[in-house]
Every structure is written in C-alpha cells, then in structure tokens.
Amino acid sequence: MTVNDGLRLIAGIFILISVALAGFVSTQWLWFTVFIGLNLFQSAFTKWCPMMLVLKKLGFKEG
Image 1 (cartoon, rainbow, N blue to C red):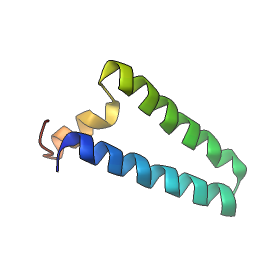
Image 2 (image 1 turned 180 degrees about the horizontal axis):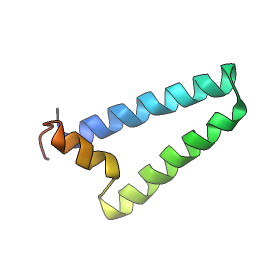
Image 3 (image 1 turned 90 degrees about the vertical axis):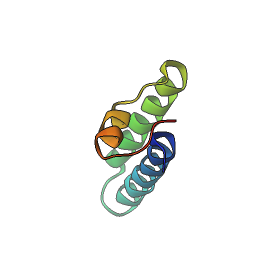
Image 4 (image 1 turned 180 degrees about the vertical axis):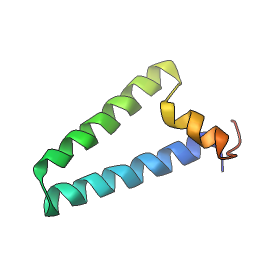
C-alpha cells in the first residue's frame, strides 16, 4: 500500500469515527471532521500532510 492510499484510508476511518462520535456522544466531535477536511483541502494544493510522515515511518511505499 502506498502513502497516498494509506492517507485516504486513515482519513476515511477518522471521518467515520468522528461522525459516529458526533451521533452518540456530542456534536462537538464534528469539529474533528472539519479539521480532517481542512487538512485534506490543504494537502490537495501543497501535496503534503502531517500523516504522510507517520505513514512513511511505518513503512508505506512512496508513490
């Protein structure tokens, strides 16, 4: 799995978790969803995301 694939996978999982937490715990968890969306938005322009560093250290392939 590549870094980009891992990034999409983790973003999707985090969004699903935050929406579930918003539904069952508190709607304040939607701010976490906003944070993820903003990170994805900026990474579309900069081609860089903090999670990419973590995934590279975990051994995900570049490209």
